[in-house]
Length: 375
Image (cartoon, rainbow, N blue to C red; front, side):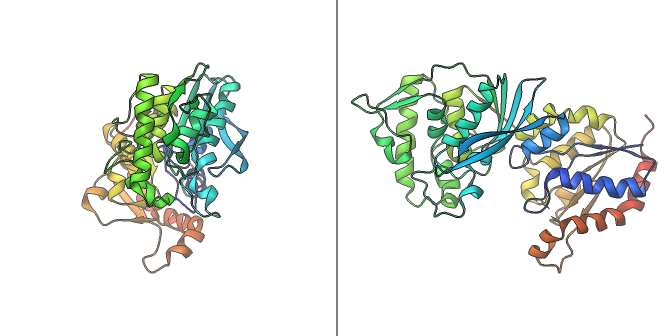
């Protein structure tokens, strides 16, 4: 019998790899006759790179770059040498978590460091870049990223301006980068446009320190107008262009990138469906299963795939909403956090809680395996 573990991370406590390894330890002890296939998943946000490096046997490399407030740091990304493919998360360079020790300053917060990380991979000979764009500290429309990759932003006198929101109203002309970009795929699971009531600034800006919506909307509108004129490219209305403070827009506008469903992209890259087809039982989960999980999140994507393949599927999660629509996706579902335990304690003890829950589920897992159709 074969069990596929395809879980997402438990945010703030366990990575997707740690979830998979914890479950494997329990299953190996309790069901020694079973073969365990570890395939951590992600949906384009935090943990995307780790999931793909583990699933594809890639390696980690480091790039010297800058955080969103221009402090030097080394950012890690995944490298698949056989495919000449790089997998990275913008949050490794321009993420909000990296600058939470400083006052938020969205007028100067920049994706320049993300561009440096991309450039590092391109200089290694990458034929494809896969970029997850969750968790940003920025609202610059990808302006900094574009500058790091060689696009020049000029004022009315032909003088180059520093690529920050504070300077954007001085932008008069864009000179495109003189480099050839590899294929760039962007893992994105939000559908916000760049501008407007559902755009980057109004929906995600406040968590990054944005208070004056008009200030940022005016500057991003000006950027999009100049891009449309000088680069003959205007993706501002494309769903997902507002992701990561408009980095989704910037990657399409300046690099010719293609936005796609994070879960679909990652599952295709790691061969998830082929691995699921070989399994008798599939285990998935994430930190919290709730209404958001139903809208493109990894565990429901795994469950839908399992149903299509006529496979049993169970979920372990930190907590689970008591929603019939949610629970209907799984044959069994287990919340590992006791209802009376404080969240902070549950996060600290997540590995032990997951171990206990999985051990308690072993009898029901055996029953599901016994009912699995013969290959």
